[in-house]
Image (cartoon, rainbow, N blue to C red; front, side, top):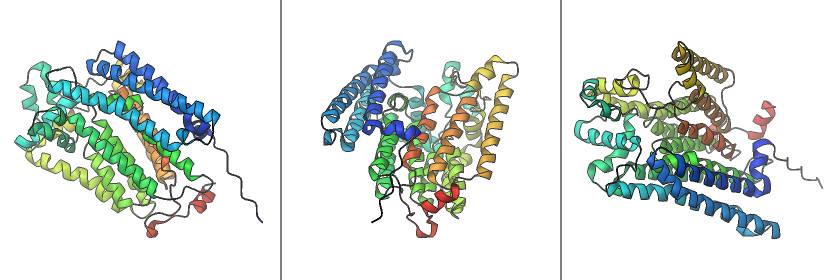
Length: 446
């Protein structure tokens, strides 16, 4: 009788994430997040952020106490179901509800009741874009129209998003009420995309050889936590929110890629690209992934086709408005400059050195060229590899952009955490014509 091969011991991030059935890291996540939320409530200069912190700190604290009870129970009875994966999922759902959805609903209701300090500017911009789309057929104001606005209102006159983002503003254009707040629909879109992403990976079946199915499920939970209860995501969705549906659609695209659904993956990332430019690098990487599997055109059909289809009506109605908002303003050539000025290297170089903006731009181009060279030499053949390239690539771009926000870090953090969740959730792709033998590929890579 042949003895079973020993299961390899986890290393690196997986070892940290899975230690103690994942409970110690859960406790650290919720405890540190509670401290962050409390500090935000006391010190933030942004009133929506302060309001979020006051509510979210309590939710994180309760979640941390619940995990502490789980650890105590596990110490007494290691096999108890109360410290198992389903219970961890339940606490994650509770944490998202109390640290994201509850503050979001509360701020939306207070705003509907007349509070003007209960939403970030992104919410107002998206809702105005929805109203313009209904009235004029385009979400954008042209250069002359923005110039005619009072000087202190010109920033809100810009819509630096792709046309699809205006769809989240349509409910407010139709009716007034807390439920028409753009953040409510950002949350709905985020939840739908994440539920689909989880369902796709769970339906994939077996875990990779050498890794138990429970290990893969735990990685999936960790990825969901990174996209929901992590403060940078919870705060963003509750107060502004436009980045979260984009991120969730990118995660859905990677999940579909991991299970061999190339065409659907292209459609998901194409929807994200029709909302915001941040999804375009992910789309490019997935097209290259598809090309390694003779499915590049199928991925590109959705990844490129949907953003182009979204741009065409705005281009036909008002080309100048489209160029002014989507190109000139993000590149720093609008009537006003972007307030995105987080102290990352690119911004510090651009503002602190003679000719700093050109230097920062050169570094950004060099980083892009390095990533392009890497993709040419070692194109990603798995969704796991694609997620890593997207995560590290966006991290480099955010660090080197002259104008950026701290909140943009939610993209690389969530993508890198999701990489473990999409690491070959099934040994055979859903499409037999695109199937790859996982073990053979791993041996070839070794």
